Length: 113
Length: 114
Image (spheres, rainbow over the protein chains, first blue to last red):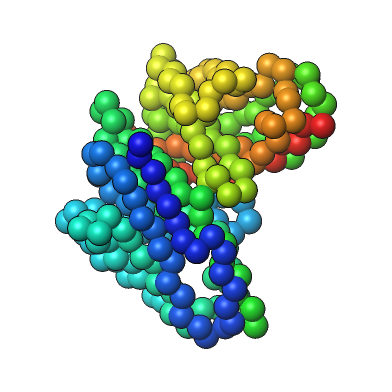
């Protein structure tokens, strides 16, 4: 059965710390892996990782896809209170011509001053 | 204005009542989705639609129905609400042309069934 597992489920750090969030997956027809940030309501897109684009970076955030280990990490350096959110990992699987998304449960990050 | 708009944003109702959640989008996307989010379970797909004439069940469609009234409108109905349908519901769209799998979410509708 296809699945996505994120760890840790929750994390509390102080401003300035560096955090690493993990996403491991089992999927039959991998297309891509997406990271979203959910602050209060709507998830917002962060990164898409594919076989041809296994590393992405935007400011203090970066993400790497390890297709051999079937996993991805999301790194946040020099964390700020505004980074407090739920971070969602989603696998995009090709299923009957449709991009099927399988979401992990998310990692809840709290950054304290 | 938000590209994907959901109404209502919050609703409290009683067991057995019929509830409709509405979604409209201005992104011009063909594909629309309804998800529910529960703590510790992530986002789970209820229904999805590739165009007005194409409706498909997701992984947790029991107890729900949908209507795609137009390309821009996709509504979710709970015919007889029950307490375990208390959740945060999201409408989302995606761009067929880009076909990346990226979803664009509405702000969510928080439903509480007493």
